[in-house]
Image 1 (cartoon, rainbow, N blue to C red):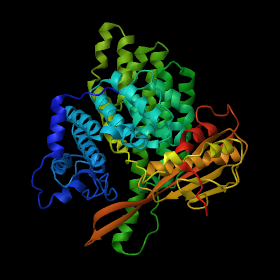
Image 2: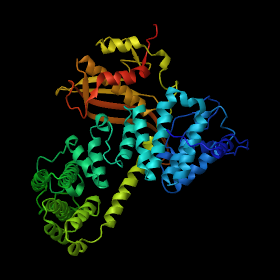
Image 3: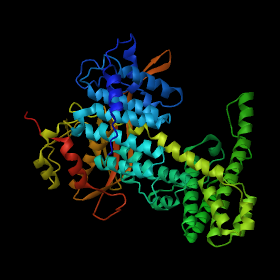
Image 4: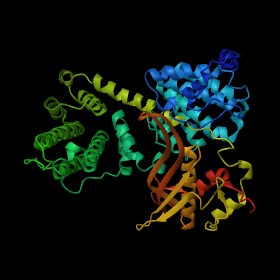
Length: 556
């Protein structure tokens, strides 16, 4: 990674970090306002306390300026000892994130340079490299992407993936950056999180990346309601109504993308299916009041609900048809019927997003010059698409703030046992003779076979890093696959949880501190070559994560 470190930047960092000023009476709080941790105390690395409701989780508006100011005070405090280099880098990273969020890209990059300089010899430490090092790389990639420098951002995103390929947050941030690269790929995010395909597809559709939408379509499970929705389902936002809306939007995105990429038959087939599914799922107009509690006001509300449900149903039908008509117009362009496409556009209001921008551009290009002017301008839609892309880069900044790892939070590499890894690869997986992260195989882990042949693997850990828990669960999943005699496994479903200690005062939350994490992976062990887009190689996972998490069993 290119490192820009001028003498001026280094001097500024030294002045900010080592200034011998007088501590403010309340500058202890500035440390927590900056990076969420307590003031450093006497601990060698300065990482005192667990991260609570940190500023980089609550970025935006005036909070950015408050975070930057707090970080500046903390960095100049004599409470931060010269030897506490990891905490100094941690504070500088927090300030960089706030500046990145507030669009001060130059300031963010300068702070990232200072953070790397502050780390010094730590940069060669494997714990630092896979946590803070990867985090700084991702933030630098986000800064480059925000500037529109995809040529610089994409290699940095791939560098982060290569350093930590099985970290969910790394894949999420990197895939958001790689969407800007023509012909880019989403990395291995879909292998780690099957539900990510839906969100990614919607994001790519919003950004106008229709080739990616088509590529992602096979990975997205579209779930339509199997029966007509109850009359009030749409008004009350039931799970069935949410499923209907999600299925409708995903299907429309895929249908339009197919029309753009030349799959006219596929677009027509999906459009017909959506219309059929919507007709079958939408509730009939509610004509009679729904029984309600007694009382005059309750009776009035009960009588009004059917009318509201009917109005929402009609609005949804109109909304759906706008998307359907847009697909018809794009199909007309693909079939060299631009006049028909123009007629549809004139008769139907189009959603102001990237697909409409693409449609207008395609119709203009297909029409003679004297008719093209009738299409109108598509700048507002382009602006919306660009904003969606920028918003995506901002939204993942908190995910890039990977918790620092030290020998205190991760097992020591020097205690790794290659012979244990060899035994595992050989299939001796059920003896329970190794430790995982210093925790007994029976402590925190659970594997539950399901009736459909899948296995749910879960792990609960009190580690300060959610990423560690996720990787340890993945490693256990690889062991389960090998124990089943299979070389690979597919994550069918995943759930990640955080346990927090919340303190309140007069009913208002005043602090929230993570106290542990849990990851659940429902996996299916598979043979080599099955579902290659989503399968994870069990041996590859063990080879990558084993040297970190396996520790020699201590004598009794």
